[in-house]
Image (cartoon, rainbow, N blue to C red; front, side, top):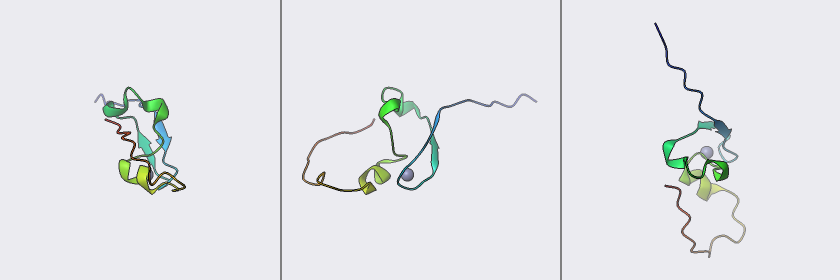
Amino acid sequence: MAQRTPELPQKTCPVCGRPFRWRKKWAACWERVKYCSERCRRNRRKSHDRAAGKEDRQG
Ligand SMILES: [Zn+2]
């Protein structure tokens, strides 16, 4: 039985502390990805980012 074991890069989300793996939607920006999801990305420490209406979507 050949079990596929894809060796995808893995990171740990600093917000929820959970590991998450590479996703295709991050293919172009994986090095910049820090959070497992947009939810965590928003839950990160808010300093003065609130008023910034910058659209920085990942995917
Ligand atoms: Zn997270």
